[in-house]
Image 1 (tube, one colour):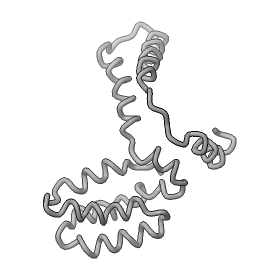
Image 2: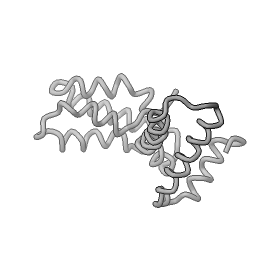
Image 3: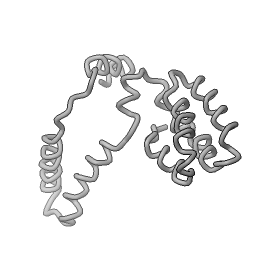
Length: 150
């Protein structure tokens, strides 16, 4: 089971919410996805459903129907959650790799493709200048969760 992007879920579920309600709805929704535990998040989702299901049933049902994928990140500590909260960084990286393969659809051999992708990865990673706040703690948490694999 994978982790769905919370940001994309928010965008998709609130695109039909009236401008006058969005601020209050987002406050209630934030109580769901920023909860400290999955149990608290489920409780807050129930409150969110009670309050908004009549006015915005698609928004509420979207969260309930996708809860299995959305709730994956509650098993991790806060530091790791901040890293997997959104998939935008990975999507941007994949888009940069796709640009390389889209512009040149035929490569003479596998090595040429590998070399092109490697150079694109080097170019993309050279633009990553901002550090991750609390990286040492996050790395130690990841080594506990993924013992022997990290």
